[in-house]
Amino acid sequence: AGTKTATRADAPPPEPRLSPTNMDSVYTLTAVIALLLVALVFVFRRRTSASNVPVLTPKLAELVQSSQHDGLCLAHDELGDVFRLPGSEPIFYFRNADTVGRLCTDNSFVKNDAVYKVVDGVVNVSNLVQPLLNNTLFQKDGPEWKQTRKDINPLFASPDYTPVALELMSRHLATIGDGAECDLQEELHVVLQQAVMRLMTGIDMPDEAAADYAECIKHFGAKTTTDLSQADAAMLLKVYPHALAAVQQVRELGPSSTPTISRSLLGLMLKADRYTDDEMARTLVNMIVAGAESPAAGIAKTIAGVAAHPKVLKKIHEELDTVVGKRAITSADVPQFKYLENVLKEGHRRWDPATVISRRVKADVELDGVRVPAGSLAVVCVHAVHMDKRQWDRPDDFVPERFEGEIHPFAWVPFGGGPRGCPGKRATMLLGKAILGELYSKYDVALQVPLAEMDKHVDKYSSWSGIGVPVSLRRRC
Image (cartoon, rainbow, N blue to C red; front, top):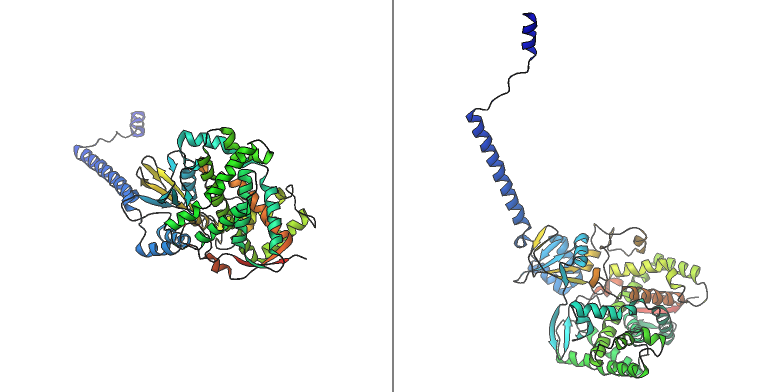
């Protein structure tokens, strides 16, 4: 009997059974949890829907109107990584580096070439001081663009960039002279116009053409509005005959007549035998305009930044003395200018010339936690990305050394990125390093006005300085 009692005591207790009342409680609790989950999803979807994204306020809109770069930076600082513009068209601005990378590389987004106004075949675009001629190679899309890109890709791997830049910069510095005061932005624009002309055609720019291009950039550089007039169109069309004459001259010489012509834009297009003279001439005008304007502004502001930071200048001189010494710079020296490259990168970060990346959204998509409807315009102000304190320590400071460490691949995007990024990135960096090396090996540069005064830009997305970059040049001892 004792054994049976022990066995019953050690047996597990009977399994509890739910009464009908308890079952009702379980069903009720389950239903409440389900409703809460639905409510949370609804709230989350409302919070991330396009209609609930912060909207640019009138006060911030005034700041953006007066200073595109600073205004958009302030808008992001106040409204966050994502905000939209008021109005019926869905236009969103993004700053997060991961989102920028997705916009640049994901095929769900297509490049948007914003055109504001067309006058006499001249278009006012979103990210340059000057307008551009319409109906050129770079306005093609789809299969046509892919074929064009294939035709001209060898241009961007040309070995001519560095020697051309060194030769033309050295020649131009000799015309300025020791102790001269000048507008470095304007002087560099002249050098880069000549360099782009040589690289795009394989021939030199005639003096008359150079004078007309110089007059053209002075006209548009002095403007303070985005309006496009008949006079503006006439100014740009004035240089078109020079471009057409260059096309006809290269055609007569033959697209393979010299190695430089063979590697040039016109040489490549003529060998492809699929473009009209008018297309090539219009493309050449735009290449000289855009290819000279943005690098001139960026390099000039970089030089101004160096002039305001003696420690940076000292490091540049130390590198030049180590790599070059007292002799003239050669093309073989330029790849060794590692610190100078970081100086140029920091200049592009701090004063990026053309700061807008825009993509059209092909289908409904979620970006940075926001549901963006198809047809929307997704815009990135590169300057805002470059001044993001989460990516850059002390972003207002000029610190080339920051590029000695690792950075997010889409926290520095002066040339955009992905398949529709700027194909001239390599060329711009090579031209810039050669120009900086040639300048600093021969001259010391002093500012004629405070650096902050040069941040007064014309009223467009480009950071073309409204007062230029006034400096004085003195021969190095």
